[in-house]
Image 1 (cartoon, one colour):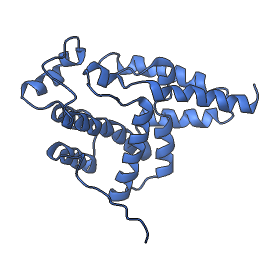
Image 2 (cartoon, helix red, strand yellow):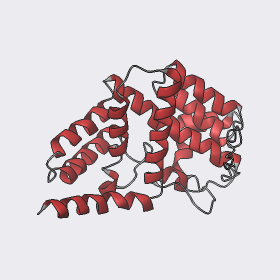
Image 3 (cartoon, one colour):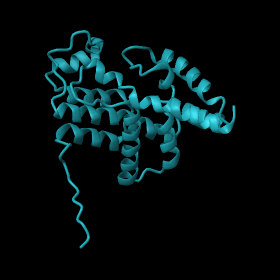
Image 4 (cartoon, helix red, strand yellow):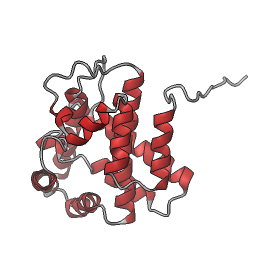
Length: 220
């Protein structure tokens, strides 16, 4: 296989993620003309990472973080988007790592890219920990945006196995909204530091889709 073919085949494979809708939104029966794809999630989490680094001045290599986030869903080009409520963490890691290795083994820099993927998945270095927090919080922020649009009806969740999760069920029984439940779930489950916790609380307590606007003026 020549270099040109490798470049194009890798691109075409990753391009699939533009058309793979996030499973969580399907499970919760999000009603909207367009629902977020995995590729859009990747963009969103990278933009969130830039903002978090900017405002809280984390001592991290942000370019390394951006690289990690660019490839953190790479395995889903083969295995699809499997949620924590569908498959165990151990089982998902096994099949996902095998898929990523299969995808990258033909690229000259494949080993280096795979090392970054595995570093992200281990959540041990400061860049990986930061990237992981961005990945989880981005999902909850998107949830809040959908909730504000009225895209989810909690009274019609037939067949949604996520509702049977003990933690999810308990939070919903308190009368919280869909997005408030997920934001609280995230704060309890994920190792958010004080800054990520602060942003999560802000999202929960405010309308965020119209929180600010930027006006562009034409030059005279």
